[in-house]
Image 1: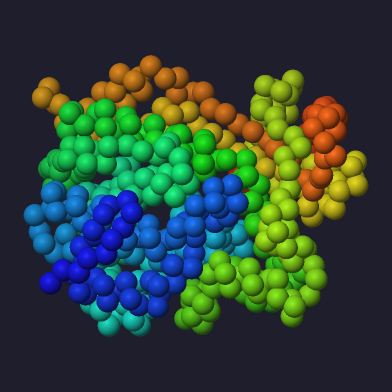
Image 2 (image 1 turned 90 degrees about the vertical axis):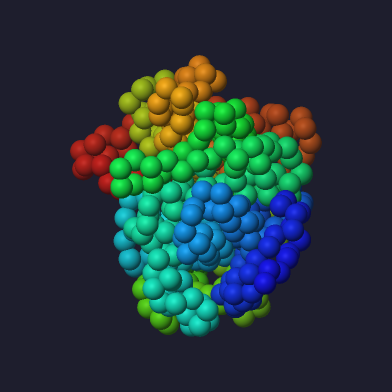
Length: 456
């Protein structure tokens, strides 16, 4: 028996009774209260969709691909469930929590490992409600499907890979709810040209040569959504403020429950508490009267009232003369960034906790493809090739070109446009000088003591 749910992206989504029962568990319903794009609604008012919506959409896409490419009904079922549960471990404000969990976790994360994936695996294995609906063996297999340790490579690739169900859903969903067209691509054509490719004992997700243009469109959609939505200046500022507010709440305000939430530990008690938190509860708890006035409360009050920090400085590597200092500046070493924040705050009498320096990169569209979609096998009549080799469009793009930025956000109000232009000219010259002045001696100390852990 199949049930149906109406979705604005995929239309009617069919799910079986046991899949609906999984969706009805408290641990899955919690995703309704975690927004997909954190506070992107401050710039795109419609961006109020949630991890719940996206998880159901990814489930639909994975189900369609699995039905076409997998012969084993049991593998089809597990891929559907893996897609449904792939985001079950996200914390409040989604990827904002990722940054803070990685910083404060008591368990060191492996290179490339994300905290929400580690937490998600534990939830799938140990949640009592999921245990009633999915056997022990199948829960282990679902985790193995997500991390690539069970079954053929194609199983993980459908859920989490170069052209996975995750991206195929969120590009269209985020584009729709943000009211933009950057993430639109031909989902049906891309899905219909995906293939299963056997190579010895292994099976991979591949693409028919007829799907090259659909994949090019998909990669460009991801690139434009990154540059126009995910890296929108207001999104960058609001995310930076969330991270700063929570971090200061832990380090400076010493809010006990906040520290306990983000110091991840592999225990039943921690997981039980973690699963009670979402966007709404975290915001309400910080702004509650019982929470003492402090850094976290000031930052979250600004966010609640949309009194955002403003970008007072933005520069790229070519704006700095010395090549060695330039490299050091854009490595984003935390101690250096903090020294810049303090110097800017001192120069302009800003509150130090409300001055944020943000270093980030925007990879070229070909570089993005080379590190993910470039791994897709393209099945050609003359043999197998990679997407990067087969696509004329992507071969014409210089992979080495990427944008790097260092930006400074601060609490400032301008009197009018004239005042804004005058102050921005002042900020541009002063802060450039501050950064270059601080970079020299810190770089020497940095090199003399050996390179510490870098946070980008």
